[in-house]
Image 1: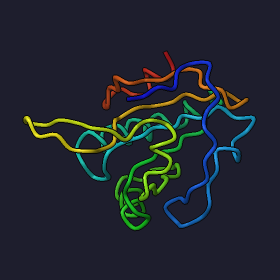
Image 2: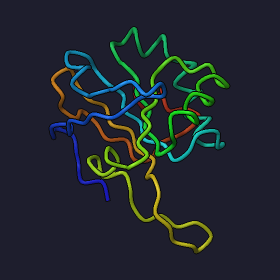
Image 3: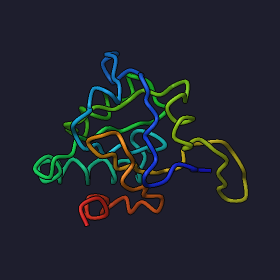
Image 4: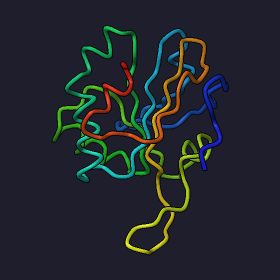
Length: 150
């Protein structure tokens, strides 16, 4: 499903964060960005992934990274998730899945033989010039920072 690869220009987007504020990828020009797509707030894997990034946030910042999470959840859900887990970075409320579509992270999934549409957990490492440095498709939710900083 994901067709973007290292070396591609990251698709530009404008959406809203957990507070309803506009957020654009172009706001981060000149900075490295960890853009991680996750299925749902407050689920075990998504919580593990987000908390791993939270626990290593200072290390990511020292390495020059900004962190942005994206899921189809709404602002209110994101606010609760951020408060419950003390997340220090913005979460994009992609309720219309427009950002997912741009990055190829919305697609068919399968669980227990049932097929459904959902978020394909993926992280894009974007450089200071808006180019994709790396696409991490096999995300280790409990050790994601190590995959980013390897």
